[in-house]
Image (cartoon, rainbow, N blue to C red; front, side, top):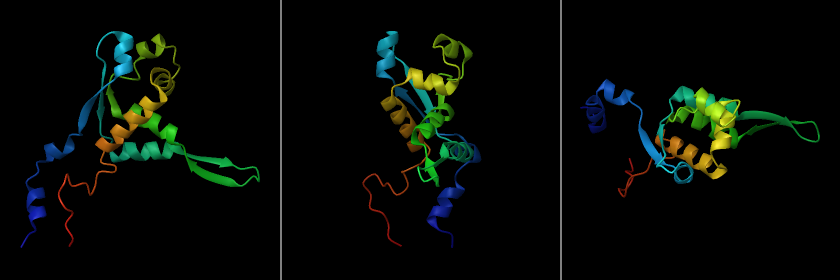
Length: 145
């Protein structure tokens, strides 16, 4: 006898599971600056993209006693999450980089967005990617088995 969960999963079509969740974020400050409504489209990260972000944010430093310390650079992770997760606008577009005199897409994000906006967009991308969402039940009780 198969479980109900397995039966439900067997009804999923491969093309349905391969598409990544996405959503639009309204950008009030940029909308005010441009005089038009500005929306960023974000999408969930793949496992490989999330791994790449973690690896890029893993840093090493040496303390005053010259001992090695490993640390995770949250700001670096947020910047890379935005570069991987924002699909519109194209934050790598040469015209945008030149217009804002940004030498790299990472520098563009730092010029274009405030620190709170960077943190918020990154958080939204991670939520869309399933981080911190397992176990949420939308009011239903979690089953004990």
